Length: 130
Image 1 (tube, rainbow, N blue to C red):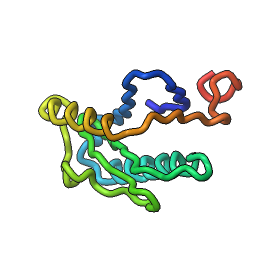
Image 2: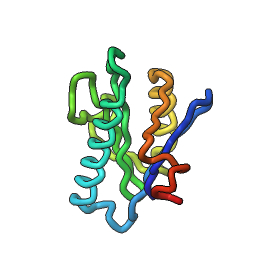
Image 3: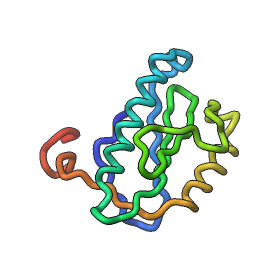
Image 4: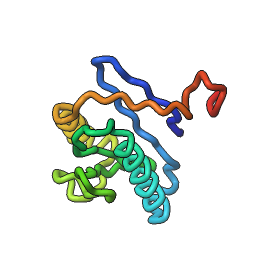
């Protein structure tokens, strides 16, 4: 699953999780690719901050199969750091559901509302996803 376009300007919770192939859960190359892709997307999101706006901590989740890892990107940084409460550990969707929900609610409470919109990915443009 690939998310090509997100425009979310409502006061409701939006959570996107990419679930790559379950058969690759233990494959280190799959995890490396997922983290690299997440890093690139987070750097892109950081570069889209309006000029003069103070950069904030960005939260991200890399998922392969049934497992996720949570990361942050601090202001002024271009690399990911393990989320402080998970220390780089894997969270499994079923077994760790309550911890995942708690972490997502915590992130939501710390986050500023942001609209991420990329004109080159606009669904009305006839581009990908049409």
